[in-house]
Length: 138
Image (cartoon, rainbow, N blue to C red):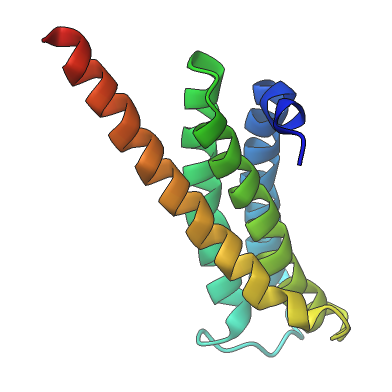
């Protein structure tokens, strides 16, 4: 795998994707709230998908904003993992519920794994930068 490709991704693209992702989650929530004939209860998986999308959209916004300040491989992997995880997880649930297309349902667990990878790499990046800062002060 070419690591230069991952490092060369524009952080601004990831930042814009995070904003568009959050706007998309608001559109889906507004659509559900204003559709009268939609029979969804509050425990439906669509609300779970919206919550996951919004939480990870905020995490993506944070990691991509940090990436704008400090271009780091770990932050890039974290941001990309959040992007792909959100698409594979939430988007597949939306497609399954709204369009009754279950062909891609097998990808939902991979989206969840990518979301975990995003959190793990974000934590590792935080520990790494914190240890560099503390070592620099000594």
